[in-house]
Image 1 (spheres, rainbow, N blue to C red):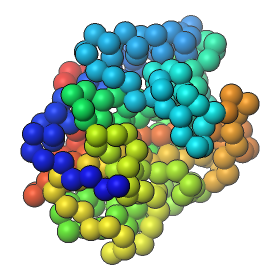
Image 2 (image 1 turned 90 degrees about the vertical axis):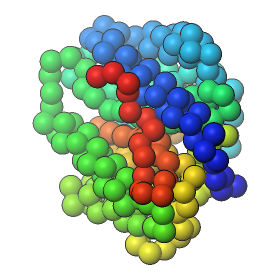
Image 3 (image 1 turned 180 degrees about the vertical axis):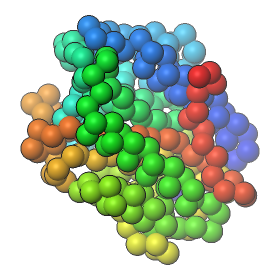
Length: 258
């Protein structure tokens, strides 16, 4: 299903997006050497409840996971890039942490992800990989607007990632979002311009460039959810929810405080 939201729904989407972004901002500020992933999950649960919102994850049971997910946020460390199931793991200096969060408020969902390095150690390769996903996300957003096509976004994202030297997996990528978290259209992280669904005002998309340092192959962890790089290399993931407007694309998942 491809859903086109009306102005009232888009106004609620802005509230959902701001909530997601603010929670991620808070979690990043709290995540330090010695923080446990299960502690991050508990913080997330508390903030969602305090906001009167609902988790998109806790009861989520798609075909590609061993559901229901049972937690409130995806936490990926180092080689874990997607659907990271929170576990009893304590963060160490230099760990590359990815937090992916989707929340629904007043019937509209928003989805975002950030990757960052914990502690004082900043491995150059990890910094470069995070930067590449963030630049690819910006390029994808810049390519989005009324009349553009999904392939234009995919091509913009893929061009940045390829030029940075990263293999690209197209099994998982961006997606439509609205009254539910995952909708059509699928937005691969590489593609051909001028192809695919034509964007219309009122369409919401979650764009999410993600990469693995030296492979495009994923393996599923024993937990049935967490997707890791097949070679054990590090990974990074950046995501925003955007709304197509008459003038272009509006980022909905920006924090209200910095």
